Every structure is written in C-alpha cells, then in structure tokens.
Image 1 (cartoon, one colour):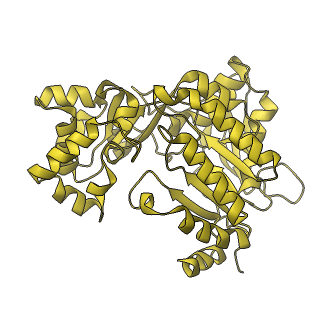
Image 2 (spheres, rainbow, N blue to C red):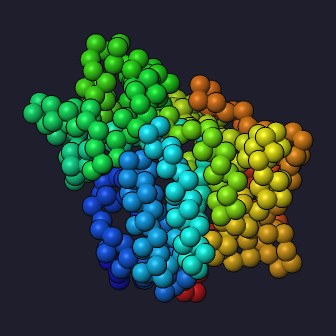
Length: 372
C-alpha cells in the first residue's frame, strides 16, 4: 500500500483521503493511516479525512486526526466539518479547542465545510458496516436473507458508538430525504422522505430502506438533516475553514433533472458570498474570497493558483457583491446561482455576461509530488 501511495503521489495526487465512516475505509486502523500519511507527507501531500465519526464519537475522531498529523508529520484537513445529530451539537466547542490547540503547537490542521444543515450521502450510512462488506453485490444479497434483515433492522434502531448511523443521527425518518434512484420505477419517489415512502408501502422505515437498496441495486442518494444553523454560522467564522460543495456539478437539464442533488451542488459558494458574507455579515467579503480561493489552493499546494498575482494562471471570477445569491433549495435544487458575470479559466472566458461560452480550457492540476 505504501508503494501504491508513492506511485500515486508521483502521478500527481494531492495526498491521502480517507472516508472513515464508510465501508471499506472504516476497517482501516490508525496505524495504517499513519503509515500511508507518512508517504504522502514525504512528497508534500496532505491527509484529508472524512473522520471516523461526525456524531457520537466526534471528539475521539478529531483526536485521531490530530494524532495522525503529529505522528506522520503531515498536514491534515477535516473533510466537511460538522457536529451531526442534536445530541452532538454541543461538541463543536471542544472540537474547535482541540484543533486550535494543535495549530498553536505547530500542526497544520485545517477544515472545509458546506453551508447547510443537512448532509447528503446514501442509505449505506444508515446500515451497519458488516452487512456491506465485500461491496454492493454482496450487500444486496445479504439484504435478501430474512435473518440478516432482522439483525440489520434491529441495529438500525439501536443507538451505538460502534458505527455512524445517520438515520438515528437525523432524529427521525421524516428528516431523511430520498433524492436519487437509478431505476425508472423508483424515480417517482425522488424528493419524498423515508417516512413517507415507508407509509406508502406499509412497512417500517428500516424495512423500507433495505427494500429500496435491493430494488435499486444502489445505495440510494439520501439527504439527512443533521446539523444546527448556529453551528454552521460559527464554523463559517473560523479562519482555518475553507468552503467545499462536497458535490458534483450537474446542469439543470436532461437526465440530471431525474434526481435531486443537495442544493449545495448549485448554491454553496454563492451562499457564502451572498447570504453569509453580505446579508448576515458573518465574515468580511475579502475573508470569504480568501477562504474560497487562496486558502484551499495553499492547503493543497496547487502551484500558481488561487490568487490574482503576476505569473499565476488567470483563473478569474467577476461577481457583483450586491446581487450574488444562491437559489437552490432542498425541494427545488436545480436552480443556478446568480450574480456571477464573468469567469475566466486559464485566461480563457468560459462565462461572459452570465452566459456560458462553450470553451473548455481546463487542465489537470497536479499535487506537489508530481514527477515530470
């Protein structure tokens, strides 16, 4: 694995990413992560972690990240910082204290976030990792076994610190939105809550979730309402937090309209500039721009990116601070943000007067270990 890590860094990877609440990454030990992060660090890369818990074991998870940063001597980033589940909302303060203490000791620890109170993932995040071992096909086969289903349903209902159960974290199936199906027959359920679908089918939420995974043969795109707005506002103001949509970039047309992305796909960055910087005045505009541009570029060691400076690539966004705004909602997510007038990528206009130009001047960006 260390050999593969070296190869990846020389191929231009930014570092090591680990999504530790999901199978199979959840099986990785701290020692394994330290060993691989040490390789990334030797090339100037970083360790980016979807931490082992964002809920019941949030503080233990951030302690693990700090330990990895210290022992591997690696820069570390918390992937979409949050405290998930109302019982865990008070843990944000001790988390911030831990990170800032580590930073004061010289460890380069940062975080990123999206500016909403819901996360988006799949129904896999509501089921125990053991049932998913071996991948999607094995998971679906197990869910056809009545004895396995009974055990899974029981574990889905039972609070635990052993794995991250976002169904319990959300608080109720009414706070779980089903937004993406592969099978045409299931697409009419897009935008309904797990509670609504369970009621339609006359089954428990747990049985319904298992049935849907089997019927669609996917993990089902799912939005969980987990966070508090007060915490989102507080995280926004931390100088070491940048902003990431944690989403793809669909177009509001064609096949993309058959599923509902999280509104962050369309709105996250305009929401920072418009709603939180201009309207709520939580951060000065200049600071919001820094944390959308130069901070992530510096964290990832992207050369000559992220600032308007002589010799840098001409990546330029021209927006109107008075009008920039997000419009995507959970109910109607396919709505473009407004207020961005021009965008240049590598010096070529891709958006002029708000209209796409059809130009594709993007190029591969490589991490600090890339061997020419």
